[in-house]
Amino acid sequence: MSWKKLVVVLSIYMFLLFPSLDETIHASAVKLIPGGQSIGISMESNGVMIVGFHSVNEQKLEDTPASKAGLKVGDTLSKINGVTVSSAADLSQVLSQQSKNKASIKIEIEREGKIKQISVKPSYNEQGHPQLGLYVRHHTQGIGTVSYIDPQTGAFGALGHVVADADTQKAVDMRKGSVLQTQIDGIQKGISGKPGGKIAIFSTNDAILGTVSRNSEYGIFGKLQEVPEHSMYKKPLTVAKQDEITEGKAEMLTVLHDNTIERFQIEIVRAKTKAPGGTTGMLIRITDPDLLEQTGGIIQGMSGSPIIQKGKLVGAVTHVLVHDPTSGYALSIEEMLKQSGQSFKGKQAS
Image 1 (cartoon, one colour):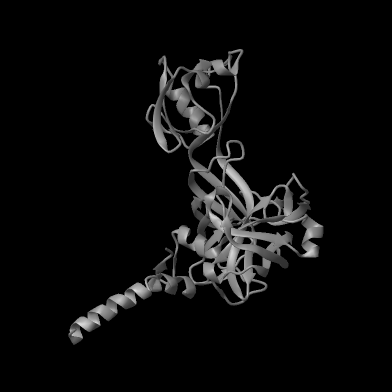
Image 2: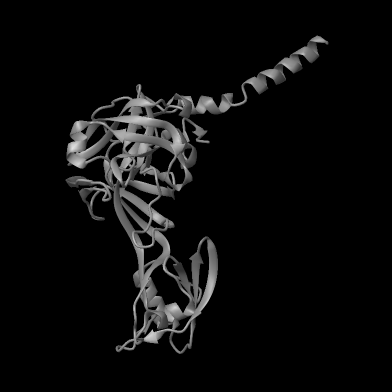
């Protein structure tokens, strides 16, 4: 074999031996500030989501205009006769304008990712206003916890799961979103069969901390206007790769009172397991006596709370086991970064 052929063969063998070298460089190079801050989340949907029906002149709900036409709870209504609708107020105004002297109107909806055109004949209430017999919502609010922040860009990830509508349980098809200043005013302790929750105070008039650009099954992602100073970590931590996460002791950061981030002890029971929604995550257990005394375990509003192990940022809390609030699931930060669509140190998380 000639020298040139030898070089080529060795090069190919080296590539086969180290096929993921370029990918692992990115994962191990990312350094982020752990979160722990509680945030208010406000989202406006694309169009208005149908969350229920009401009668107008009819005796039965199935006889309302919307029901008879085949509209369903969870549908997102986006246009009436080609005119865009983005809020409940828009719906009322456009409906009044478009239904004049018309026996029926064309409504455009999105259902399970498909666009449909549906013809509806409105009813009229006692005041003569056209009605479809719908309850709709275009705005969703909730609370959660920041998982990580990029100190260079202000990019952040939070929750570790999708923001869904409270009535339909469908993911919010977000038009725009923001994160707001909030504080925790109380705790509803969790018990078996009944998850607890953080009681938060915030409104859309509070200071906007940043914008949300993506709502996905791996969390919400966006950018903060300013990078907040962390009370515990002045310097960013390296993000652990999945194979670096081990079963055993770890710590979780979250807020239980006002805006104060606290550190609590947990255990990673399984370093890799299937989590709700089909994602791959960790099974965790709360072991900190103080946290168990105050909350009973994992509670609503704790989603996104960062997990640190051996000095590295490893995961974020996502779900609680309803029958055992001391245990739940967490998503790896590495996986959150891959699904975030964000760039770190000039590289796309992939």
